[in-house]
Length: 302
Image (tube, rainbow, N blue to C red; front, side, top):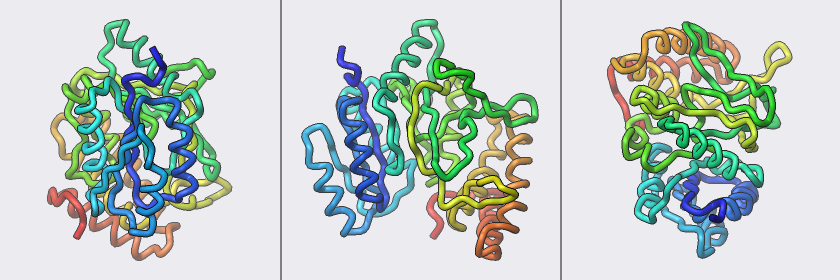
């Protein structure tokens, strides 16, 4: 079996850097059976470049015509992969680039876990961002603490509560059982919500230390006391805080997870209110997000 057979990549784009996106397609092509690109309303000038780069037999470009959110776009790609007979989907943002064996490493772990009788949720890559300090991206809540699961060696496979969407490989039969991404979230916490929902349904997710990927996490980071912290726009902070608060209201989410993540959210609220610029705009959007999350006002902010 060719190592990419049955694996379909779903890449969501929104005004990507053309060179960066071209590198992603070149890196992905040899690793998967097919690539489905779902464009979330890029500008006309960018679309011309997307049309050119995606004009290959193994790449399908789906143009949504407007920004309908990451969850909607991912679901469109997942549904197209399902219709094509995919066994797995591997999700990507346009600003990621996998190592040459990343998909192979992910699939090997997924199949090994399944052979042990484990219901596999997702398996995800270890990403590196040149602008960050690159702590291990694999998260698990233990008691009331959010702990990063270390990679002791390249062969390590670690249990996680969730994975970031980019570089995450998911069996189609898992998506059939758990359901697809929650489109009401629009962006932010989409991957967290799905991973925790999968776990609540008995599906376990794993971080694969040998599966590596370059990935830009957020905007230019904030440097504070010599350390780099992820930064986002005020609009992204709106969705982040709204969706977090919405999740805390869900009865199926364990209380210890709500408390642990809620404490981190409080710290972020103070941190970004003081250090993100413009401060007043970030504070207003985070506060609006909290209010909308408490009211259940979801979907795209209009």
